[in-house]
Image (tube, rainbow, N blue to C red; front, top):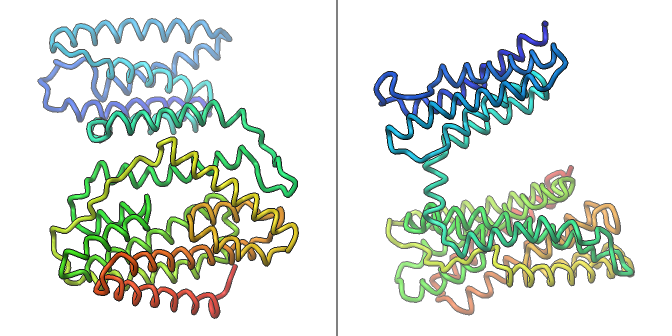
Length: 417
């Protein structure tokens, strides 16, 4: 009995939480014109808890089943009358009522923590109607299809791939190659969705930062080309510096997800470099005005062609890294990571991170990751020098030098964990 009372209270609270969202959305409706509001949903959750309690007391699950069927019939009939009157074809209210009853029962007869989490999630989904509908309106069918195809490939293909190394050096694991490919694409997709939802018309800084989550190199090249026709290229160099800051932060996020212990080696140094780029970018953007944007033809990171190319490159670099680590030791990691970082910093970082605990220590892998970041920054600068005017790449060179100075100071004098 002592445990039943708080569980029934949770069942009531779940219903009240959902009812609060439903009632607020229909707050302007005339009194007694709605089938269910905050009180009805609250009672529905409590009713589900009571049905589950009775089923436990009587030792018969049929009591709960009969209660759910009866509740569904009564609730749906009233909602049907309301829908006829309002000419409304939405079934969301009915599904929400059934979910509240079921979660109330789960709170009493099952895992109450899962019921509480699911209740909060249900209320959050109901409250996000405008956001979700707006997202669907902004994304195109090609983008949604790419994401759906990738989801199917991940759910079906990933479990079928062998989760073991298939090369003599222990570097090529097909399951890990595809998993990390999906993980990297998912991180990029967050930035891509931000660009599509927020738009790139909110100024140079927002568009550059959002685009850098997808590709900081692409942002730098786009800004460099634009600087050829714009007399004031300094703000664009500042935006490119901020894009470099985002690139380094992205590497730290990937490391935190894949191998958190490596952050002890790279964390302070990488953050110092990001700080250098960030401060330089802010100084260069002092004279910015609304208007210029990064006009990117952003492509979905979930397109199959680029994904397969990334997976192929990642698998190749992983195999080479493992082979060198087994023959020449950890010292070869820095070299291979630097070379692969010139091609793709994500490939370089992921291929070295996965060697932690097998053929390399966390400290050696951390140094290899830092080498990849450094080389990638230099290659980005070299591309800017090749395609952009001096008024763009000279400020970017100064920003890179500032970030390098910050990073070297942190590497030499700050502790590692």
